[in-house]
Length: 168
Image (tube, rainbow, N blue to C red; front, side):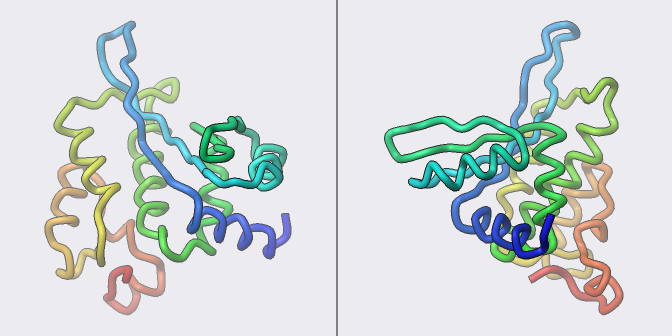
């Protein structure tokens, strides 16, 4: 896949995309599991069809235009592909990938159970606005990451970690 195409998809995501972590009831054991989901909403059928043909996923027509949804491992693969190019939603992308690695990918088979408090913490972190790091700009964010068992420095890019700065 060409770098320009990856950057194009990242731009679409910055403008029209969203990343979400959904919770599903898993009836066999009475617990909840997390599912990674990406969605893009646009008026262009051509754009969402291009995404679906390239990455998989589902296209639906709505009153507002067209919606493209992709979940689970395919959503993770798309996030990894566009992560270096995302600008405005960089924090959400990094955090969603961390949740995937720490909650979704580590479960067997692809399932890890979460309680209400854990889920509420994850969702509040996903919706966090502003700078985040482990060096004091947002200590509360770092503390909540630690409560989930996630090292706050995992949110830093390698250059930020080396310089002692957090994401802007």
